[in-house]
Structures are given as C-alpha cells and as structure tokens.
Picture 1: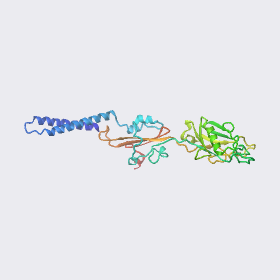
Picture 2: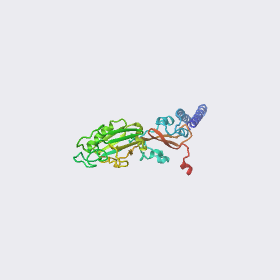
Picture 3: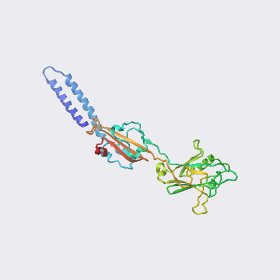
Length: 327
C-alpha cells in the first residue's frame, strides 16, 4: 500500500509542479499561492510516504500466514522470535475476545484470568510424623522410638526409599539420621528433612511453622522438575527394617510415619507439580502505509511449556479455522 500511495503522491507532485510552471508562464493575472501550496503539500507527502515505503521495504511484515506455517512444536522462544520477530511487551494488555482468539489449548489449564506466565511448581510428597516420644513398655504402634518392624511401627531402623526414574536413594535411621530418646515429632521431621536435603537427587523441608510435623519432599534434579514426577517417574516409600517372617503377612511400618495419610507403606507417586508455562503475543497492524495490501490486524499467540512451543493460535492471517469453516 505504501508504494501505491508513493506513486499517487509523486503523480500529484508533478501535476502541481506543472501547474506552477504554467502559472509562471501565463501573461494574465497570476495566483501563485495556490500551486505553490499544492506543490509543497505533495512534496511533503511524497517525502513522508517515501520514508514509509523504504521502512516497509527494509522491514517487511513478519506476522504472516507464511511465517505462521513455519512454526512447529518443540521450537524455543528464540526460534519463534527468529520467525516472527520480537513479541509484544509481556505487560501489554490485549482484548483477545475482539479478535476471536484465545490461548493455545495446552496452556489454558494453567493460564487463567489473563495470565501470561506461570512459574514452575515442583511436584511433592509430604511425610507426616505421628506419635509420641519414646516411653517405657512400648506397645505396638506407640512411640516414635519403637523399632520399625513387624512388631512395632516406630522409627528405629526405618528406611525411606526415594525413587526418581530408575535411580533409588535410601534414607536409613541410624545411618543417615539418628533417633534420640524422647525426640518429638517436630524434631524427627527436621532430622529426616536434613538427611534427605543432603542428597543430590532430592530436596526437603521439615518442621515449618505452618506444618511442624510434616516433611515436604521435592525432586532436585532438573529432569524431574515441574510435572515430570507426575508421570510416575518419582515415588516415595516407607520401608521397615525387616521383612515379615511369613509371606503375605502384614508389615506395620506406619505407626510413626504416613505418606499423605497413606497407611500401607506402599510407594506413593509425587503429585501437584506443574511445568513453567507462558505465552507470548505477536501483533502487526495492517495500516495504510504497511508494505502489503491488507489492513487487517494480524496476531499470533504462541504457548510454551518448559520453554518449548506446544501450541499456537492466530487471527487476521487469512487462514481459515475450523470455526470459520463451520460458519
């Protein structure tokens, strides 16, 4: 469009220039201000449109149907920038409904209410330490100082088995942390958390002000960040110091520790994790001086999970959507 307007301005510049020459050559009464003003106006317009045409030629539209077709799942944000250029500022508001456009489906579950970015949340499992400090004449299931075996569901010798992918980490009482007489549930939670936190694969926080008898365990390896552990790649299990003598016999190891209220000692998957999710918006306004012949507002929204492109939507690119076809 800029080139057509440039041709239009140049034509009328020549026309007013010719009019000024004829006026100067005429023998009758001259009205010079009119052709001079007209010539100056179209000279200015020609210069302005010429700069706009040069800018359009040097910076052609990037938010186009052709470039949209170059986007593919798995691209990084930098890859998408290489195709579409720099996105709009993250804090810029858009009335997406007016463009009949919404966030890509894979990211809408996390990004609600106009959100454009959600940080990673690690999946986690909580261990609850229950019971009272060690007492004389312990009965089965009583006292944190009881042995963790078929007869007593305590802490002495208890093992926590932490599994991520095919790797296994064991935290053993008496080896990685030691129970002391009259230790409270809060003290036990803190000790266990410190032992887990000292490992390479796991992080833990225990005995906080809000949850004094809880140990919150999260993965520390990047491969398990976010929702990776939600895919069954990470488990936590409470194991006893000894196995039942009879096959199939129940092994009570839950008198002192529970995994999110589980009371069977079986492995528990980590839950609740979310990967980092964000969207970016690219927009170009098809105005009069644009390089193409379209006056549509062109927009592309790209959604990313864990830094990789997972979905795109567009408006104004001349691409027929399923909704358009249905109408």
